[in-house]
Length: 448
Image (tube, rainbow, N blue to C red; front, side, top):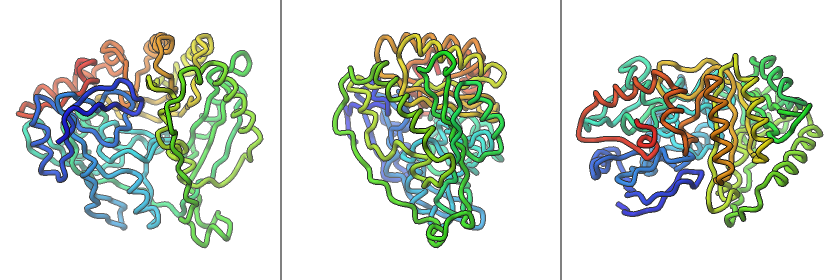
């Protein structure tokens, strides 16, 4: 046990001193959780805000990372919750399997992906992470471990998928991996000159396996919302050139680089972001429209830059990610882009994706059919004021914010966005009495 560690989420804001324990086997997790009045699980620390922070008890699952079983006939992987997607890919991609859904970093754990019900570039076709989970073993408030899933104890499973660890600690899970024929992605890039063209591209390519757009959040006038929309699919072996087809999973290993220090606060400003966006837009227009991209470069471009969160300086950053319903998304996105441009608080990492239908049975699962916009901002008074304005636009459009990226949402914003789901989760938590209580700084802030 370590006492008094100062930790944070990936955004490095807020930072809190927490009593951290790291049990080495599933049987020790209950004792670790019971050591304080409340506890929360923590994987690899890639939730951006305070959802995996609890000063009284933060239980790290980093040692619970064993692979337990795998069935190549069905693709079903059984593993402990601390296993990372990086390990899953390293182990099973050479055997022809890849996660059916993956977020933008492979340095997340199986348990964390379930707790956030993460999504990827293929939500419009494949749904979110929990749609590919067969079962979980959950340590609940009564101290017992219950196996639940879509077909057994479904209410508990649904509350856990997206529930940010508030129903208990996931110890083990069964995950269905998807068969693939190579480690290459066939990518096609469409340069969309404005927001309407970007949305039209998404709507016309719903049959694409993957779709994601970089969006210039500072462009104005006729160029407002100009985007590079990247469409992709796992390349079949027969589609590869001969030298790649001979070893279809032998993709180049990327060299990792580390950000050595915190960037100065003045380095990120409207001028530097505008200049970067202009260069990136021009480079995207000149790049080949169709090409093969290795899986690591396509899904996880930022993972090659270790500790990239230091780019935003010592004060940290926060990500603003909203989901907007299909009927209101276009106008809401236009209003948000106008607000960002007017504030001069652009984001290097501005990402737009198309969501398919959500999972209404899961009280706090983020996706709803429509669009999601994600933006990173350094923690400044001006950025926080801007995000309050973005909240107003999101709420008026019937949208919601992503708990896994949140560090500042209000209880009112949560209840507006998730509606009856919040009450369903509260009732389930109230009914699940026992000696263990699961809570986080985020949960306290949001009244959960």
